[in-house]
Length: 164
Image 1 (cartoon, rainbow, N blue to C red):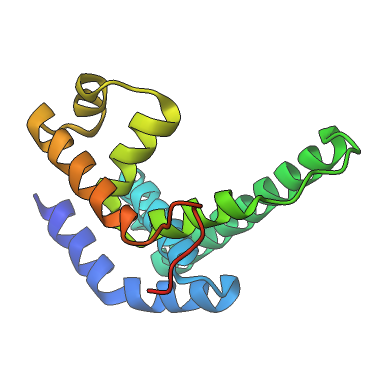
Image 2 (tube, rainbow, N blue to C red):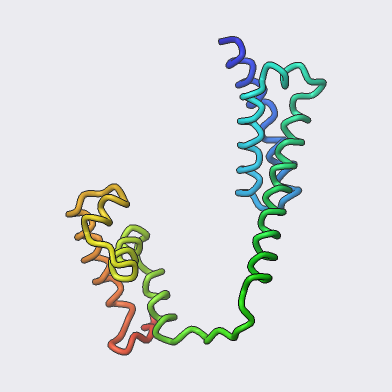
């Protein structure tokens, strides 16, 4: 129990500073929060050895920084692999209908948007959607109905975007 209290006190005293450091390094708050959370999780898993370090905060800061850099490397490697494996073909531009549909989808609530995409674009049944989103079938049906109605207000017969 003493370890939990000691770690909680350490976390409370140092987490904002470590987050500030990693945020300054990454320039992205969510990436910094992810890296810091991972670092504190590792610190907790190894608390018996981390707590006797000369500076447990420096240990966490170093682990968080390494995690952030590792995330960057993974992203860069994904981009390189994509560029290397992507065919050298020209891709057609998006059709006006596609742009209008995406615009209309963005105007409706996220739950409605999700079930409309799963039903109409992915082809799932109401029961399959209910299982995936963890909602009753009746709720999925209501979201579909409300989402369609809301989207209709943003689309004309020719699928062009109406001024909102």
